[in-house]
Image: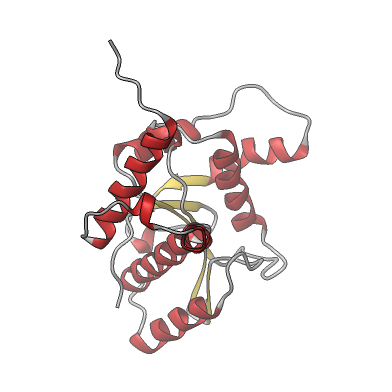
Length: 217
């Protein structure tokens, strides 16, 4: 016989477990938190995707600077520019526009849905739309032909590998709708970055690189 867990007990257990893990103090947070406390916590959690995106952007920048042998002064300037950008600003997440180094990159903090191994349709579309913009430009940078293009996706183990494998499979059939057609066609431009060296990269491709969030300095 399955034990019944009521809605209140389920929410209480989840809240107390997670806050205990964060604070290191075991207590009944469900009862202790006031309405004002819960409202403040809700506001903080609503920004969690921005926290993920910023941390992954900084991690991706560290990866780029290391692999492209970026000088420390330029690296500092790039990190400072990223820190000054407001969340949801209309532009590329990373833009390096130097005479001898041109890079555009988008950062995606998307996890396979429901602890599974596939992305939701909206997640898949968002990834492909960003790849399309890397190739075709944005208002901030309408011509990306001379730039190395990267799409960084947060890595969550084998689930991410399987989800990307499904995402990048050639689309079946055709579509008359321009946005769907663009998504179908952009897949041939995307390449998982695995064993290639930096010198082998082409400006005609979008290189998809998975990264776990790491500490940066």
